Amino acid sequence: MNKFLQAVIGLAVAIAPLTSSPALAQAEEIVIPAIAAMSGPVAVTGQDAQKGIAVALEHINADGGVAGRPLKIQLYDTQGNPGVVRQVMERLTRLERAPIILGCEISAGTSAAAQFAEQARVPYLNSSAVSAELLERGYKWYFSDQITADSEASTVVSFLEHLMTQGDVVPALLYEDSPRGAGTIERIEVLLEERGIEIAASAPYSRSDRNLLPPVKRVQTSGANVVIWAGYTEDVVTGLQAMQQLDFKPYIVGIGGGPGDVRIPQLVDRGFIEDVNLSTVDYFNPDMDRAQRFVKSYEEEHGIVPSSYASMCYRGAYTLKAALEKTLEAGQDLTTENLRAAILEIDIPGDQLISPFSRIKFDEHGRNVGSQNLIAQWKEGGTKKVTVWPPEVAVEDPNPLN
Image 1 (cartoon, one colour):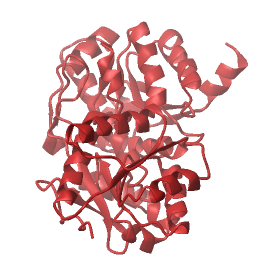
Image 2: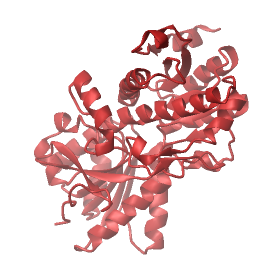
Image 3: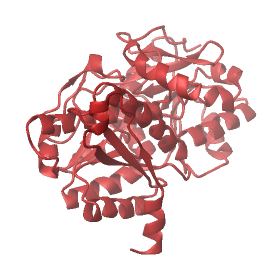
């Protein structure tokens, strides 16, 4: 093994189970690997995923584990780098012969992981990346319980049409240019074109950029009054600061964990957050009743409500548990083939989930047919995210256009 690979594999965190009974403590432990970007430009995604997994393991093992056995998840750092992802996947599939891998990885890394898992014939369970393109490759070993860019795009456009009932809407697109941001924006562009809605400007940027004044200025000068923005936490903070510097206050419809990150009020002027009606299309919000056990445990541990990043692999750990449990309760060994078959049999109802999904159930392409979005908006002086869309799950009405 070369020194680079040794360094990569050394960046692993064992998230140990907490057992609540002597019987569970004495049972054989199930150890499953997971990958996430815990360092690098999008480290916040992996660090939050790690915290979410830890709470999930606390709850799973307190409730009896997996078929009476404690669960442990070994989290490997990929830095969000596809090259590092391939190195880690090679180790896990070929040397350690993992029977299944949980993915808490960004879309660019997930693409590399899914390709490697397909070649190795090992189930890769994605609970983080939203790229819809991966589900169109005909993979047999890739499964995603997450929302997709398709569902995000549909939710954005329905919300935009709601705003259009209140006045003239001039939309512009602002997005980081990775497969995650660009992929979602491409689908939004298609839907807007189908509806005859013209886009005032389209401004991509690299998520490694630390000066977003140029793309934000391009959007401002276009005359846009609504900005559809796909981004991660770091670039969203930088972009909001650029908007404030330029005194540009559009109505922002955000996409992804960045605009909805619970740290936003500590990183950006709260008054400005309220001025731009900062909203985000998301797969989690702490005000949902069904999520309260997770929210309370996380807040007690970390002193802050969980972010969407933290929620994604909390949910993923439970999807993993369902696959492991189905296999063991059928009297089968935890092999790649058995776990793949078990994943296709999963059907978890929505009231058992912390997300606004109707259920977790996979089709033959690995897509969760029960995933669905919500839109949360920063309210109460830019300090609290409130679910505002769609109407059937909204806690409050969204802020008006004007």
